[in-house]
Length: 349
Image (cartoon, rainbow, N blue to C red; front, side, top):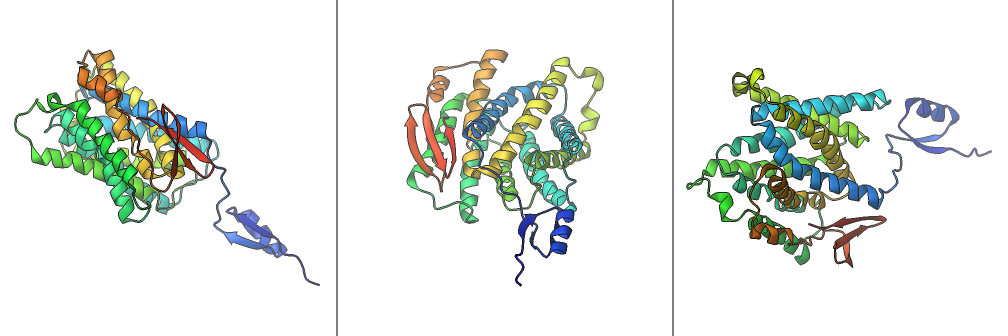
């Protein structure tokens, strides 16, 4: 008599032992099938990284008025990471494996110490307008590295046109006034800003190649914890602790830091981590084109910064970047709808 064998997928030891006892076939280490994310969830996540990260420019400006930059960003990410990690674990989330902590440490070094830390150092040597322009090379690095790693499909003319139009929009936004602060260009500082964008692209693509926890919230928490610790250690090593005087820290800097912790890190970075897991890195990187526009308008509305005709023209400049490997179709005058299987997302710069 032939007994029908039960085939099951499980990652739970108890279920594995029970299936083996019954004579079932078990696929060890299989992941549960996850339903495709909804269009609304993707749109909300993009809104988070587009709008919230655009507002963090002003938040960082206020925070570093009285708090050294590396210590400020290290405190921001470490606090956000510890809070998020405790929240996930308290709700019954599994403890990460040692190898996953190693992957998170590599990502924390690339994204936060490299991306944020190097940029903070570079902005002490070059104008902020030039720094914003050089950081807008992020989609270029992401697409090129993805193509080299063969994680992205062959780039078409429309993809390259979208990338270059987005970069041109940032150039138009900044204009010559953004470079007028210094007459001579500090090449080392400019190289640092480009390198920070390169490291963020490296980290983004690396996160798609390693086995991180299934929970993107837990994964984001681990990256923020390791990145925040590295930023703090670097801040102490470079003598920032000697320049921090708690009695001189302003209420505005504290409120700005609290905003960066809650919205910039816990909300937006968690959304970014989730988006990287459900769509392509090149599409996610388009936030680098949108953030400067949001930052300029908030600077005008809240900080009294100038808003010229050139900036208004840039705001009307739409970037129609089509993600490689996805079939794009026109939906209406507001933007482009990207379709991949059952997932859709609207991208309008």
